[in-house]
Length: 193
Image 1 (tube, rainbow, N blue to C red):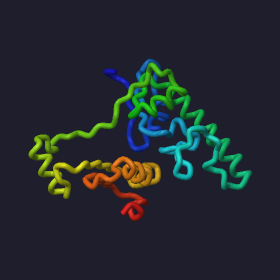
Image 2 (cartoon, rainbow, N blue to C red):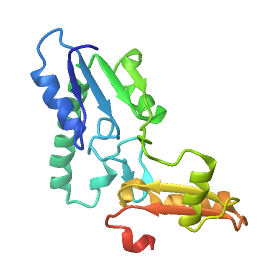
Image 3 (cartoon, rainbow, N blue to C red):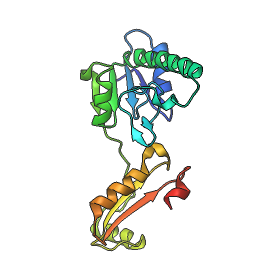
Image 4 (cartoon, rainbow, N blue to C red):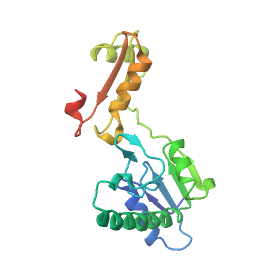
């Protein structure tokens, strides 16, 4: 797309809503979707309910609210989801960061307009030679034979670091050379230490 509207940002679903409303006819709209806000009526980033992924909405995320509040909130959630669906359907191309998101959005938009482009990290200035990588590992306390997994991001329930700890423990098993490094800040920082 040489000219058009491209949406992205921390609140990219809002950008998509605004761009779909403002876009003139025949101007391409490329929407970048990096989370579950278009699939979840509550527009939660991770669609977690009680630490577990909810794949079908039963409005359990508002189950503890009084009945009258639940009814109003559920109605608003449905209306807001309809608005988001109509906006994403205006996109000429939808770029998602995982096949999981592609599968979710295929229920909302023509699957032929969806492309998966995984999140990438620019590696300019990063170590590239085996010697530079070995030096970086040593400086961080890892030996050459260690298996190291690094995750960096916000430390929130949505990122499910506690699930990662459990999964890594199962995968690493008795390997004393397995290392899981978690980097970031957020409300779960203390719990993860």
